[in-house]
Image (cartoon, rainbow, N blue to C red; front, side):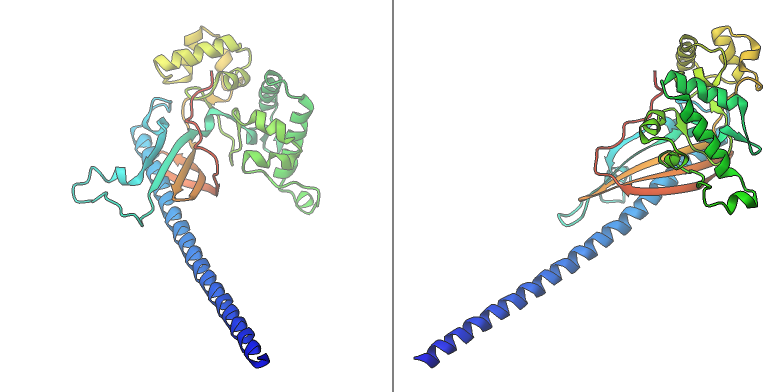
Amino acid sequence: MRQHGAALLSAMLTVALVATFAAAALWQQWRTVEVEAAERARIQAAWLLVGGLDWARLLLREDGRSGGADHLGEPWAVPLEEARLSDFLAAERNVSTDVGPDVMEAFLSGQIVDQQSMMNVANLVKDGQLSVQDMQAFGRLFALLELPQAQLDTLAENLRFALDASPANRSSPLAPLPPQRMEQLVWLGVPERTVAVLRPYVTVLPLRAPVNLNTASAEVMHAMVPGLSMADAQRLVSARERSPFRDVGEARLAIGAEPSMFSAEQAYVGINTNYFEVRSRLRLDRLMIEERALVRRDTMEVRVVQRWRAAAPGPAAPAQAAPR
């Protein structure tokens, strides 16, 4: 009887061990399949985002070919709402858009944002010194947004320090890194709350760049042009919606301003753009990725300056529109 009980216990232990090993092997196999599927989705997403970026560069290249002023009525300024990639192939007669149950559908959305519709932080430093003209422009923006002037002084001085290429500065452990994106302004002592308030009106570009009067918001134009009231800035926004400005003189005539108000000595503005940000969002099964790319256009050449990517758990960003 005792031997029979021991044999039964041994059999039960053997069954438990076999079940444990089988479960572990099954879990390992499932995990391997999931990892491979995720890697495949990541690679596919990367290539699809590259294709989206190339498409945006083509739009900007064709716009550069036509020349003229850059404004929000051009094809590049029309945002792409989320759409299935297979829908883009529907117009091709020889391409089937039918997908099987095991095929992941891809949805793409995006927009191109004129980065010269905003004030460039890099303008604060000119030839290694603070630019008085741009400090005054940013001062008007800070006053309009009710931000402390001391934060602007801190931002400008730390930016000058960061851009100082002298050997003494580069060897200093206190020298901050030059920012490349808005969120990196915290490196220069700017609070995150201030960065959030400035985000619709300020950008970070590699080089000095003028503000485009055809795409800038009323707040930005008010800050950039000395003596321009918010009411006149709103009139400029309304005037360009009827007919985009072909030169800075047309903007001046639209509000009957003095020639000196829009002169190069007073305001660093124009009607053309070289820097754009391409924003792409891809939804592929459970994977959602957002990519942003800063591109520089020089007539027919459109090159990528920098790219960065992140998971995008939220809904797609709204299309760009000139703030009222």
